[in-house]
Length: 134
Image (cartoon, rainbow, N blue to C red; front, side):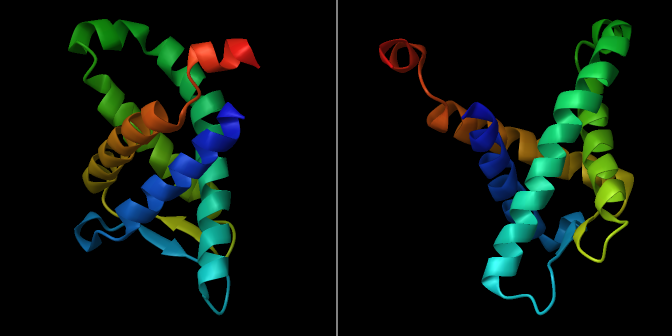
């Protein structure tokens, strides 16, 4: 259930970021681009982004532990931008998906996605006492 919530929150955060034209992050839906196709594209890109964060992100973050210590955690901005860029590269093989622009604007987009994920994840994530009752 938590993974489904994470994918939905990722899709919403990606949608918010794609509305900001200054960030050069574009979403290319299936043709002809109706709202259902945009929603499905957002969910698929959110799923790919969640998988990239879970698998590749974990490996990169473990390897970069010395850099986290050295930079007091600021390297996480670069790593999150890299993971968003990697999601764009993965979906670039199809005619739909995420297209990113300049790397530093991608880092800003990843920062906004992280903030939205933290806020909405905290609101929508089931509480520990709720899980104990079920």
